[in-house]
Image (cartoon, one colour):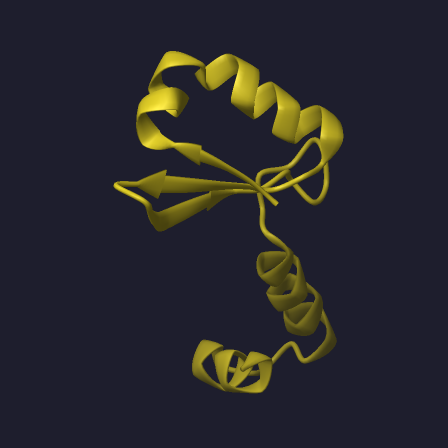
Length: 76
């Protein structure tokens, strides 16, 4: 996994995000040598929903009458 400082991200955001998008490799963002965030490629191009949202939707369709709390308990 590549790493990048926040300062470098501010200067080269288009380049760094473009590399993540094209290569599919994650980039670890650092500030003063400490990891603070991670830039990851989208799992499904065309959507901004993370995988767990898709899983919740799938389970909601499967178990139509479950309250949201029960669904979240089953996910974790």
